[in-house]
Every structure is written in structure tokens, then in C-alpha cells.
Image (cartoon, rainbow, N blue to C red; front, side):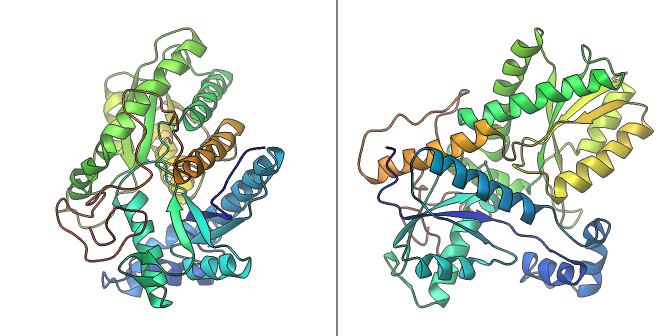
Length: 375
């Protein structure tokens, strides 16, 4: 029987999203807390959500992932409760900690629904855990004095995440052919969430910058897709969902700009693959399925969007493998940390100064799961 000790719970830790129109502005207040953005502007931003009935897909998708993880754990004979919590909406981090305490959990391992290492994809979650524990009076200079937390490493280059993306992309090439596109000439365009250039620079401490992580796994996925299709696949990386003032540089090219540029060069067939996301939440539903697809249609392109890893079996199985890997590390055992591509497996205990908002500028906010609570 697989051994999850010393953990007695798994925290599925996500971003959160509104469930109804009345939730939209309060949710966006949470997301933008401390930035002084007026509600009138949040109402404008919220139009993305109102266009989908005021409800984000992310909550139902997290519940589906939670159920899939529970089923996979049970199939391996692992009796480990899965608790779901979010940074920005119910169930909040505080709710999740309360639930962990109610079931008697003393040491939990956190699984963040972001595959890549950056401030917004890793450290911000670790900071929120520490801040909530501090508000509960459960944090001192050594860390949590209540439920103890470790985290599962960034998993962008784990075989399970990679294979699930490969499967989704191969299916998408088939869908493109079925709708009359030329799948043999189609380009694979990976898409991920853009981040500020300053955050990109700071992400290097993790072992590779945010963009380098994507480029490395993109190359690996493209090779594997090519093997399945029997040909070399041309690919490139694009970004979506930038925000903030226009004067602040963010990672480029935007997916819509890249589609426009490639159409001008004669490209007519494209498969969009959202490798930066683990489920079809609002950035995928709006930025890709709505905006990018409208751009492609206006340009006369044949475009399909590959699915995210979601609850695909290789991904879910890989997450449980990562849980068991982290448990073995916690027990002091030698572990073969599986990774594909040219980058090694990332650390499960973050290095001091890892994933700051800006390079070499400590936030002054404590962060769990690191060698130093305040670095």
C-alpha cells in the first residue's frame, strides 16, 4: 500500500471565482486588494464574468479535480482526506484551515492549481497561508504553530502534466481536420498567462524563469505530439490576460497579436494549447474561447483550442505520484524526482528569495514552505 505519511490531509489550493453575479465585484475586490481600484472599474472588468452569467467555471472544475484526486487516492488504498481552499473566494484559506483542524489534521501538503513557478503561481499562495495563520494567532518565527504545511513542487515538467497536454493537443489536431482545416500544415500555439517583466526576472531564483519553464516544456510537448502525428510540429509561445497600466511591461506576444502576425505571413491553420492553465477557467473561456477565436475567425484562420489537463487520467495520476514523492522526501527517503525536458525537477522547499514579486526586493510578508519564513 502506498504511504502518504507524514501527511494526514491534502489541501487543494486554488485561486477562487464568483458563483453568481452578486459575487463578482466582491471577488474582484479580493483579487485587487491594496491597489485602490474603484468599484466602477471593477464593474467594467467584471463584464467578462457577467457574460458567463456571473459565474466562473473554476469552482466546479476544482470540485471535479477534488473528486478525481479522491478517487485516485482510494484506488491506491490511500486514506487521505482532500480539503479545498481558495485565495480569493469561498471556501477561503481560513475556511480550509478550519476544516483541516476539524478533521484532526496536523500536517497537510498543499497542491496549488498552478503548474509553474512565479510569484503569482507559487509564492503568493505561500504568503497567503502564512498571513492567515498569523491572523489566527498560529504563526511564529519558526512557521505554523497550528496545522503544519508542506507543498508539492511546481509540476510543469512532470510526466503526468506533459502527457495530459500531449493527449489533448493530439485530439485538437484531429478536431481541426474534422472541421475542414489542414492539420498537416497547422501550427501549435501555446498560450499562458502573462506576468510583468519584473515578476519574470524574479522567477529565475526558482531554477528557471517563468518563460523559460514554458519554453522548455513546450519543446518537450511539441516533440511528443510530433511523434503521435508522424511529423515535426511547428510551435511557439504566446501570452494572454495581461492587466495593469499600459506603461508596465508584461511578457509578450499577446496571442491575438501573434495570430494577426502569423495570418499576415500566410498561416491559415492553428491549434491553441493553454499549457499555462490546468482547467478551463475564465482566462481560457474568455481570453481564448471568446477573444482569440474571434480574432482567428476575423483573420480567416481555421483554429481549434486544445483542452486543458483538467481531470485527465495522466494528470491526476501524476498529482498523486507527486504527493507520494513529497511524502517520501518528508520522511527523509531518497527519491527519484521525475521530470522531462532539459530542466530538473523543481524544489519542494523553496529557496530563500524564491519567486518574489520583484527581483531582489523582499515583500516583507512571511511565506511558508521555504527555508526562511521572511526571505
